Amino acid sequence: MDERVREHAEVLVDWSARVEAGDDVVVSVAEDAHELGVAVAEALGERGANVTTLYGSSELSRAYLKGIEAGTDGDVEAKDFDSDPAVDRAIFEAADAYLRIGGGRNTTATADVDRPTRQAYAKARKGVREARMDTDWVSTVHPTRSLAQQAGMAYEEYQDFVYDAVLRDWESLAEEMAQMKDVLDAGDEVRIVTERDDAPDTDVTMSIAGRTAVNSAASVAYDSHNLPSGEVFTAPYDTEGEVFFDVPMTIDATRVRNVHLAFEGGEVVDFSAESGEDALADILDTDEGARRLGELGIGMNRGIDRFTDSILFDEKMGDTVHLAVGRAYDACLPEGESGNDSAVHVDMISDVSERSRMEVDGEVVQRNGTFRWEDGFEE
Image (cartoon, rainbow, N blue to C red):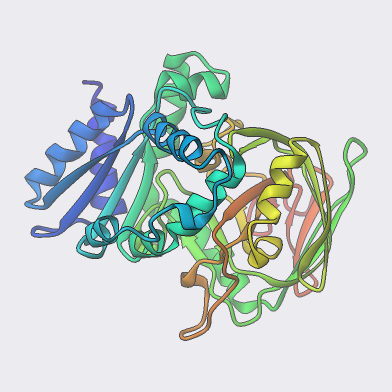
């Protein structure tokens, strides 16, 4: 076994999930992620945790959903699924931690499942999803050949990329990102502006008053649930203006490029995409909350140096910002307050490395990807 696999497992168990002796841990292992699953199981055993393993297969999910379509003549609704199956809820309600190890043989395994079927399934399992998110959950990926292919890299090259992003000095990065958290926590309004010759302009403002930013340093101790991570995010509202997302992404197994959203009164009132517009429309029509923002995220992990068509990595990349339509995370909300609610949470990313600025309460805090505490900010 590549020693980096064991290092990955140790970071996941110790730094990210903070697993302790006696904890009940559910581990979901994707296709072709067996090696990291083995290393994680070994690490959990050494720490005296209790382990329940699940098989996280997108090919099995496809088979199930296609079966549902066949049994309903393709006219699938949420009522065709058992709402929040008790066995699934029980697993997560009893768990202290949930570790999801992604991978897979085919990154578009569910591409031929109708979008209404996927939406109905997501709605029916909202309670299961909430129970899972009430655990100390962490999501990561094992570098697989399918993910390397999706990223346009040789397998060995992709392995190096993943471990450069995962095996970081997380304490040092957390200290740096705390500066951005402090700025957002003290602010009331964020404005993002881009004025590039090769892309439509962005000029969007959003309120963040009363919200708490998360220093997403790849650990539940920071209310952070992804490994790798390396972003600071909050839950905005009252969004106004227009924003252009120039980083390609895959939404519901569909490649989506060059998305434009227009906001009025906090809600998307117009949208377009160069490709994948139907997939974007289906997301925005999922429910009432799908047309409102649930997240503003600022990428700060400069160990991620290229786009890979994987949101786990791309949204953390330095010199980017992302906005997510749909569900807001509770960690950003005041006690007792509910934020934007939706069955979806879909991130879209903008490159802000040039001819851009981010303002908080009228003060520029990032210019052309450089933060005000970094060398080169004035230039």
